[in-house]
Length: 311
Image 1 (spheres, rainbow, N blue to C red):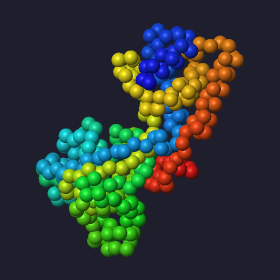
Image 2: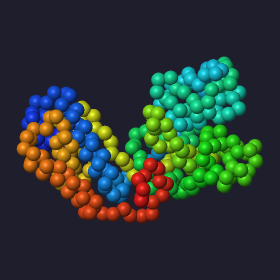
Image 3: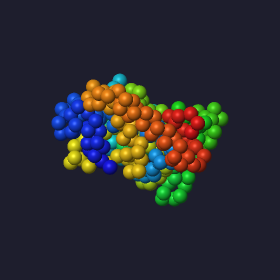
Image 4: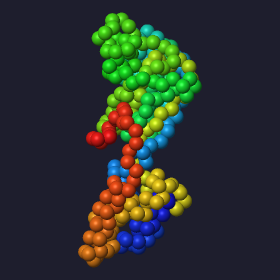
């Protein structure tokens, strides 16, 4: 079922009785009800219904020249989405930097300590999820080219950043001399690092790889996905944007939830209190049906990232 189709059904319960008769501001109210229902359904549905396999391409390092200014973190380059989170080594700079923004004028994490036109090398040693609303990674990532399963190593890699100064081969950095630093080669381990989601960061989840990859590779993993928000243009019949929920669950579960959300808005068209209460009751029944009828989670949970308690 498409977003337009469920919106047409919901519009029958409004004072307008038809989606085509609704102004844009009223369609936004209807859209908010659909998005709210989606998030409620996803919050109740077991994770095995929200899993997908993600494939990520690790690119070869890129080299060139760039102009830098001391005290600035602006990067005078044209970068793409896949550059976000990558490490950048700049000639004359002691610390390997990290690309933290690719929108507008790209920016790196640390200010430059010198000025001039210098050489640089970008290493794609991170996996930044910007296209997927990833809740958590289910299994350890695997290098498809070799079959190598990456090992999560929080003790050694957490909070060391792109520079990796003081990082050991395995175990806490305190076990090793601070002179030990990054290594290059096929990745063997990883860590899930924080992103600035609360600050409007462009990435939702970040995985840092080690050693720093120097060749192209494909990394695959399973992940639990959160609900996406629909846009106003998705309500139109020409968009054909489908709802990412099994068809058998839309009319019996998602629609009653959205209907109840709509009953709390000023465009609700049913004046009879008893019928409105019936709509709210059906929402409660739908939420109970999701928890009772859908298969429970399977498999041992790993790599919990922003996951609700108990999973």
